[in-house]
Image (cartoon, rainbow, N blue to C red; front, top):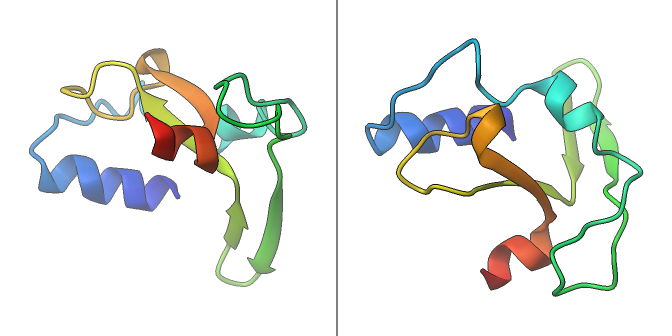
Length: 88
């Protein structure tokens, strides 16, 4: 997921501040907590490992950018489930 965000930001010429960029630790703090987006039923953020050797997992957590002109910076994202993020 984080690599996807980096690709999106690079492709759209958004500056990436490596010291403030969304990362695994940022994501980990949200797992098992409910989404507050309002378009779901408070779905709990979950993930499952699908390829341990390659470090791949899938989940329902999305890092929604508050200011869409910025990269996926930790101080400019809100955690949303995929359902709520797609409704915005």
